[in-house]
Length: 267
Image (tube, rainbow, N blue to C red; front, side, top):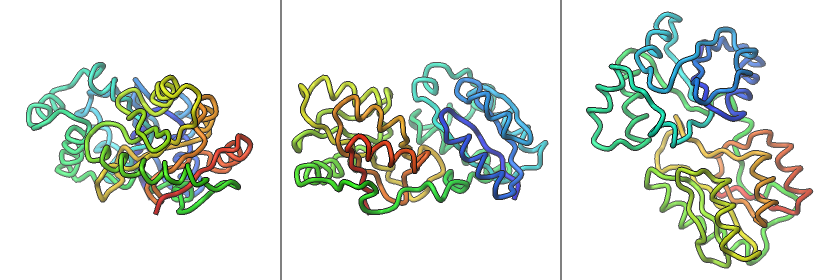
């Protein structure tokens, strides 16, 4: 299968490329200059670098390579989308047509423009199905009674948060919402929450956006998430089953076990 892979930051693009190579897919990488790691070049058959605002160039490359199936992999920081972007004419016209300039509106508009050109955006987990979170406890330790109560409350908060174009995570302490994720990202949100609870235990709950597809902005956790949880006194992590990617999944669960952290997938 031939794919184009739009690469953002983090390990998601690298793992997707390694998986694609194993599966025998022909992948051309379109690496975002402001985000992607140089490592993507070594794993890609072909690699093109382009800036966040170069939508016209993106379409030209895909047409040149005769690619009609595209996957987005990796994070694009919200601060870059709204502060660093230098739009080309194609993107300027798209921005002018948007009723709201939020992430959903912007990427949704890109999806439509690509579709008009015969290019289809596919599920961003397509190359990494084995790393999608399952349901139920994943660590040796299951959530305790108080953690379970925090998870249940946090799920209500995170679900409500996911209805807006902001973050995907909530930090909960004793059934109270301490912090919500915005543009700063999950790690910074947890550190902010830790500064508010005076050493009390936190629970981290992540939820996917309220949409049927997983074309972009899929919730992602990994070993680094566990390291920040350990640093901030966060003892439980709840993620949405079948809609969350767990990067370096085995290493992540091992690190959680070593730290006494519990991870659970919410059905």
